[in-house]
Length: 74
Image (cartoon, rainbow, N blue to C red; front, side):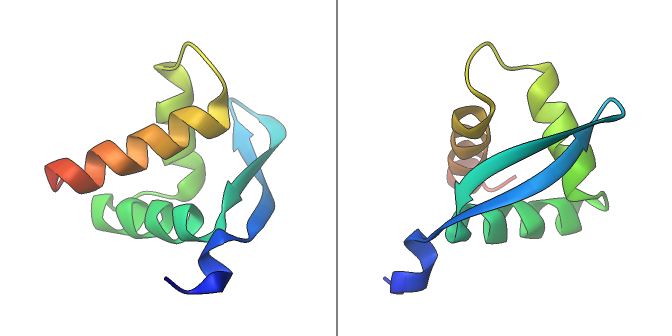
């Protein structure tokens, strides 16, 4: 594991026209970017989709989404 992958990065995303900050490990941001690219959308679009289906914390929902997407190969 690359030590840089575990560094927490805080980034702003726009969800439904509102700017919010999300803190994730660099590895999750990289994975989210890759998933968005493969789907032909932006990270903001993908985070908005995740936000629409979550019941808990947004950062946790993103991590679970990335893990499930990777595990299922979607």
